[in-house]
Length: 162
Ligand SMILES: [Fe+2]
Ligand SMILES: [Fe+2]
Image (cartoon, rainbow, N blue to C red):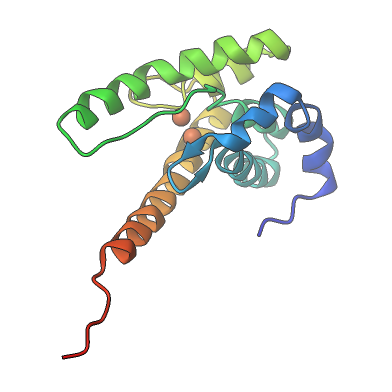
């Protein structure tokens, strides 16, 4: 459980409380909702940028909106998973940005945090954008592995007495 401090919440709240942003609570991503994933990425990236005296406010806003794509990305176990995943990796930063500017005013750094977060499909241009891209990938690895663990547990045959 994350303890989201007041400094973080002051910047994050206008985005988190927004009606459209709340839609992300219902979209599954890796092992949780896009909402939970995005808040987690924003919080860890904020902690890193705050410690390094970087632009932590733009980091929070950009990171919160980095996956604001508002559609369900369904994965099925077939060959299509590869092409669909690549397509999603390429297009979702642009879709997230297009959605974000409909509801929020963004500066250049925030724009690039969103558009560049899927390196090497996009390119982060600031330290803050590199940090968000790194934190996003780092967290995704944990979310994926926890998802796979859950799927494996479901597939375990029930114990049968001889
Ligand atoms: Fe993403
Ligand atoms: Fe993400």
